[in-house]
Length: 436
Picture 1: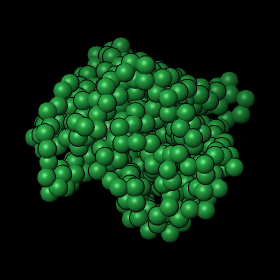
Picture 2: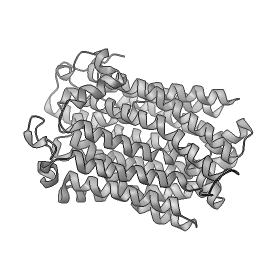
Picture 3: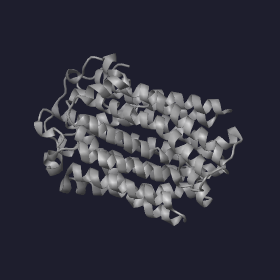
């Protein structure tokens, strides 16, 4: 993968390139989340079709599919992040999008369960879309607007997540394979679009040599862990990502089990979550963070996650899931805030590595989470369940979010807590970053 950006750029050219990059990144995030959301309502039906298993047993394959994806992502994300720091963001982004589209087509035409696993291996091995998107944002955003732009990424993810499950639920009426094929077509169109319009934003003089030592997942985490204040926040991200695996692995199974929802019911509920997410991350985040700072926005986000998971875990009627929606949306404040707190502590040449390390942490979560959540679901819904609790995985997610909140309190600093938005990016060398 190589890139040949111009040797020099005028300020106006840089501004135009940054604008084009922002537009494409936001569109890419939206299209990818549409593709991801399309699958959620129908994946259980496809698993049951190919395996011949019932709801409580088919969920195990859902967990293993996510595990396979996560293992590949854990290995590949730091490598791809380091490659983007060495060769530029553009080739890495296009390569990732192409791999994702191939995954959708393989899953859409899969004759056996083995092909579903093959698709997930390919997708996990090339998965760098969101980490590279965040590296793009870090490239083109000054510190004072970076959190809002990370928030825009979240907002466009919300748009896609609103549309995807609704589209998947509707297309699922024509068969569980149709939504996967539609997602593949959409992703491939995005590859072609990006080839013609996506600029490079990492200037040659800001690139650094590729190093296998720092490109492996443990090396990336160890290297960035030496930067004061980053290691603990990566662990917070890991815990939140671990809790979040409850959505792709057991949400549809839980709604089927607890309320008898079909793919359209699931699609509409996730669509409602998406609307709430758009409101928060597309609008309110740009008002909240400048007023209260990154630290308190992070606190609100994590507390909201605890509340949302607890409501869904204890819900005994379908309308309670919709009540959890606004809290799930406000949970989206945590990611942009914590991401910006870490991004502000490192140099421009390390942004891709940071996103790769975060991808590795999230990959670890995606390895552990699917097994934890699906086994919990099976344990509390099977005929041998000690107590029948279809929402048990969400109760586990709430406990993990509580642990993330406690960790956030411990690893943040007095400077973090007292700073307002304009001062939320202290120098990495500052002693104020020492945990208090």
